[in-house]
Image (cartoon, rainbow, N blue to C red):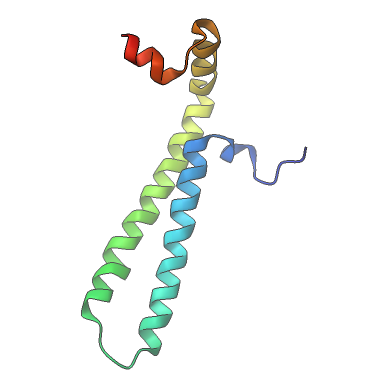
Length: 97
């Protein structure tokens, strides 16, 4: 089976960060175009487009970096070994503690 995404995005946290970043970047472009072609002034749209959505894009980029770092440090392998050793899900292991 051929991979469509690079190996960096094989971690679920990186994939979630990618979705958040791309969705919000697209939303910035879409809302900017809507605002340009709108005849009325929308003062609250500027508050959403410029300060809030870029923060969400940065959050997505941070999640991508966290996923990359967890792959490089082997945290995914640690959880896989923990599940194989105990035979339980990670959530169940935390409930037993």
